[in-house]
Image 1: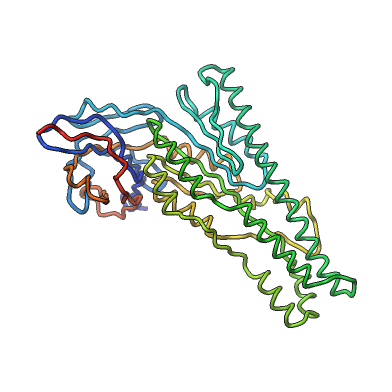
Image 2: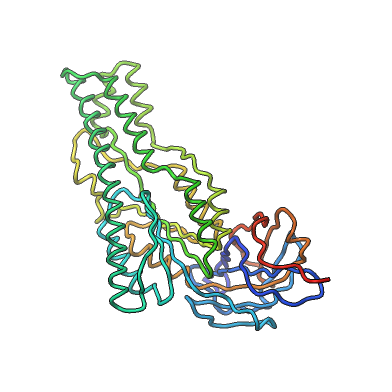
Length: 412
């Protein structure tokens, strides 16, 4: 591959950050934009102030300062506004939407506490059941060890509670399918009743994966009050539901009535569900909170990663089929809109390691805009690299500023 042929990817938070007001004779608003630039999978750390172009509503703006941030350290700074002091404090959020506690989660969380966290960082844990703020000091080895143990215990506890519910529903659905098959063999069973019960099971599984938009938005609003960078790591486990095995389905369809055939075809069709989640509202809430969301999709389907549920419920009648839906698309869109990353793997530890590395490096671009532009109902953001004809991709930035008044009008 020739040098320069790899596309540059620019990723940015969809938000404006607070920094000190600069004295001017006109009313202006100070804007800071976190930006990531990648050449393939490699973060580009050699860019300078003159390499960036910024646009508000299509109008070019002067970039006044650029900072290169790594973790909590300022690696390089450029521009006349030396008085600007970015807040490099970090707040992490680990959000779990999982139905099985996988052994690899222990490795992932050990890696996070041992390698990613530093003194002064704070952590929230969000499960479908509860939100926890990590208590205690992590400035000592003993404090960090206790915090890690507490965190892992809470993650395991909440996932196992939901896992018990999930496993119970799966067992019931497999029993429904086995009863249907036994009826086809002449044994006593009500096929219509069992298929309706199976449908109820599908709906109960959907309820376990419901995303509460209001809760997510409220949590993001609370994050907004915290200073510094906010990094959200969102774990979603690939959904699986029991269906007829190919052999069992063929046997059933050969003997079923037309009505039963239609019902089973509907229930066994490629599983896709629409989730009532307002992805725009959630993306905006996290964007306004200056948080980048990293979507970690746990497939658990690699060669050496047989899903636990398949080991627990062996059945010649049923198989576990992958399930897709809007929840996956929603989380992927939220990650893109906030300047985060999305990745899928059977190994949660590797997913978290990659996401932490991606979150630690970024530029902070500072510029000024007239107050009248800032006071408009919305403003849109654009960014490009000067003199670069390669393809650019970056996070969407278009947001209401009604509640984002972090600067003050100057005296006339």
